[in-house]
Amino acid sequence: MSEQELLIDLQNGNPEALGELYSRLAKNIYSLAYQIVKNKEDAEEVLQDCFLKLNDNIARYNPKIAGARAYIYTIARNEALMRIRKRKSRPQRAETNMFDFGFTNDKNLDDKIILDNVLNRLEPTEAELIKAAFFLGYSHAEISKLKNIPLGTVKAKIRRSLIKLKDYLGEP
Image 1: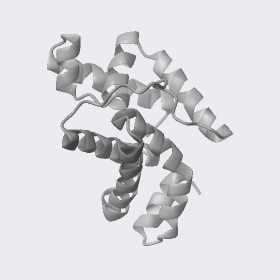
Image 2 (image 1 turned 180 degrees about the horizontal axis):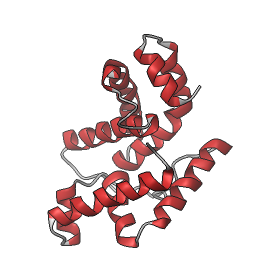
Image 3 (image 1 turned 180 degrees about the vertical axis):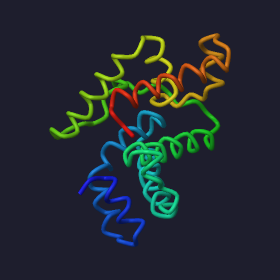
């Protein structure tokens, strides 16, 4: 059963679907959260909050708007950014590679390879903006200041880059 089918199953009231999604995606979501919050305890909290929020707001999921992983990863990213904002501090750089997401099994390794490949297809400045926004947790305004690029340009470039990534991945 695909992740999208599991989300629809969860919408239909099957609580086992949440457990299956957790077992499939928890490691990747934890790794994404850790890359943003740079703290083990906060990353664990983000992971937990992500699945609680997913369960509580499952009625909002629309498969025509977003793929299952994109939807869940967006929840995780937003939870991680909220945790940082609550701390009122910028995360410290981790001493790990930005793309070391803790991929350990073959399927997850495939995901890492796909991620690396699609990011490498972007222009270097586009990839840098995507990494800053989605892996390092910077807001568009912060990126604008750091890169000395107008805010509207940052937003437009990120949006165009996301559209390219979506096309590269064949997402609906």
